Image (cartoon, helix red, strand yellow):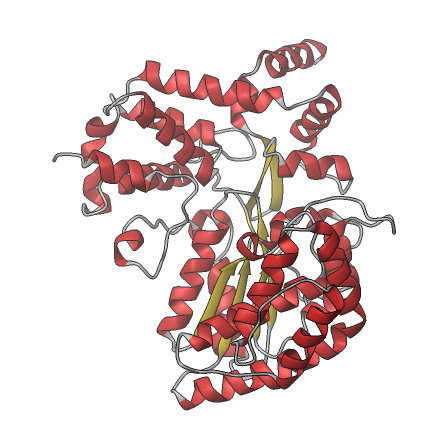
Length: 445
């Protein structure tokens, strides 16, 4: 079997989620549900297709940065489309300013993306309220924005947001103007856009409209003058407005919110009483520290599927020496990743930049060492103390400091039958600082 190096390199790109509607990308997909502690995407899908196909639902989804959320959401999109739902999936990072975002920005982004998707199907809806609002906005901002009387809704929203994205000052003025009109904007989106969209889609044989807002978990965790953080303001204080859209909607939210003292408020205001679904890491070790063979086997398959997508899973293990000098070298890579999908792909990507396969242990260790030093450079003494506490307790408290540990990927979350547990990123266990602490701790025992 000859390894297609260029294809393998593209398949290992850590910044590219799998497009699950694409047959070639689907070959790379490994279902980790059996070891992740539950069928998370199936639950989101079942809520829409089986439990409430005709009434709007609002579901929340979260997890660590790079743990595979986008790939799972794209899988959800593909499966819903197979069941004849019209799905609008978009990455909010492409249309919103994540360091400076408000509820009206999110609502307009959703309206713009839905409109654009419908226009591609030759469904053209022109909400009268927005035509009037855009004319008022242009007058108020006193800045030249050529909308055109016949402009589609998506074009109008696109031009206004593009203009304000260039200027924080203009963005603030627009927000001050739109904020008192939030309720009217929401009402227009529902009655003039979403309700009519659902009618038009059902006339075409579709079962309904689903909007998946990805990357909203990347909203900056910065304090506001009120004392609350930006995510708390958006998803808790204003959560009831975000859940009032008349279609099925899935929001990605920051993982840190699930550790907030207001997590119950989040569950009720934005989740409508239902807690967010959390996508944890793939466990390659158990709580006890022993290797978890089932999780490790799936991680091996993830690597080998990228190299040999056309080969049956049962036959791939016989081809390990095409990619690594031996099985132990592959296992070393899988275990050091801690079950973090993007980190594992990043390590592989780095190996490919160093040399052609098969990779020997020396190449793997060099790449691991670089990753270790890069991650460790960012950790200050206070954060090390928090990391040591997580190692001892296998849990994370709700303090803001712990949010940093999760967001910076210093610690990982896992799920098993006993519930959630936490462990340090394995690459940090190999730093002199961690080893010294471990040594001192054992001496005290």
